[in-house]
Length: 235
Image 1 (cartoon, rainbow, N blue to C red):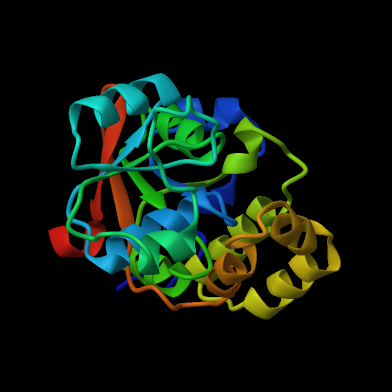
Image 2: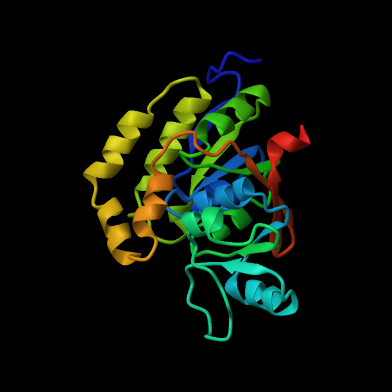
């Protein structure tokens, strides 16, 4: 195994969407408060068919065709489209793990689909950070960590904070406590819970813990969607 230095497998954070679109190494998408944790929760719950879609129209069309599938999204759909919220708690504990899962979001999905040239696409968050870092050290590649807020609202600074902490973790440094403190100093946690009263608090109990979901989601892009599997099961 490599020793974790930057020279062995550089890891850096993207600050513009164009960086992701041009990237040819490993890309890791972080949408901390929802998408990343929802995907990890779906894998952790035992879902074997998980797909991320490029846009709501494609996801809704597939949902209409596949009656036995579940759609996860915070996007507003027409009333006839049955869906779950983009909620890690719901994905992990309040849905049927035997059914295919379709997910489309405002920031995480576009971030994933932007990595069209990447050699490998992973999804990260605090909950799986130690496992993603371990996987990257065991499989060294130049790595770009993509905060999903670049594709929706850059003020969602938790994505940048988590991205920097993951870069540190890949290089063998533990900055989780400092990252968590920085997020709590912002208004983002309280804003999120106020905006999502049904599951917000329970989602935060998942989102703000380190190393609780031992999965490494890897996305294989297949046109307008990407298939998600646990990278460690494919080694």
